[in-house]
Amino acid sequence: MFQDLRDSNSSKFQVSEFILLGFPGIHSWQHWLSLPLALLYLLALSANILILIIIYREATLHQPMEATLHQPMYYFLGILAMVDMGLATTIMPKILAILWFNAKAISFPQCFVQMYAIHCFVGMESGIFVCMAIDRYIAICRPLRYPLIITGSFVVKATVFMALRNSLTTIPIPVFAAQRQYCSKNQIEHCLCSNLGVTSLSCDDDKTVKSIYQLLLAWTLMGSDLSLIILSYALILQSVLKLNSAEAASKALSTCTSHLILILFFYTVIIVISITHSAAMTIPLIPVLLNVLHNVIPPALNPMVYALKNKELRQGLYKVLKLDFKGN
Image (cartoon, rainbow, N blue to C red):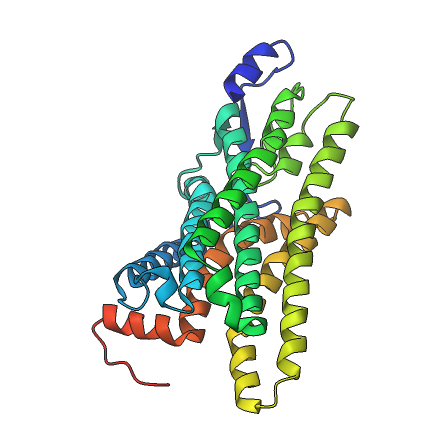
């Protein structure tokens, strides 16, 4: 699709590929960042694969969905693990190739496909966070109705809806970017094909409509997701504060703490990246570094936080590793 767009506008494209320069301002020693980034990537892959193995093998997690009260949450965790691996794999192989082999060139189709995949996976992760927030809200605030609402059908429908929403609504972003004119500049001060980094090289004059659509899309999707998450946890907090049992309140809050930590990090970085790009910072390394870390740290942290905060996952981990499980 992107190749066809490029061919139909061949008179407008004066360059055949983009050059990803890496981290701005530190090109001479940026290769030293390859070790921590590679370790983060390996951690993300291994930890998420381990989560999937635990969910698949643990007997309490793969019974019929209606038989286990909290099982739908594990299905969402499994989906989140796959999304996390997809997001990290979308960018990390190319970044490591830049840092290790100086392979900075990327073709137009590859660049726009990467742009699409990043937006799609980020949106999907945001959608899964919404599903998990709704799951926690119903489990804590409407426990008697939980088995009736959060069923296998609900999980499938919610997942399909989020997949369709993000795969379809993000198509215009790389399509609009591919339709722009790129006259002579092709060097991007970035490690990946970010939308802002690529479109800043365009030499066409009519950027307003496309930029407005991309801005509205980002804030509509992420803004609506974040609003639903905040509303869900606000209602959870309100319900927990009404509990007479301090032990029950502490257990409910502990269940949600790990979710909030990851969600706050995820959305805070997105907001900071948007602000730093809009403010045209004199230190361009900061938004670039944040952008890269935002795509690799959550995939590495998500399984670790959930495994540490969740008794069933912890027990399943020890069983997979052939260790004795101790603790409440």
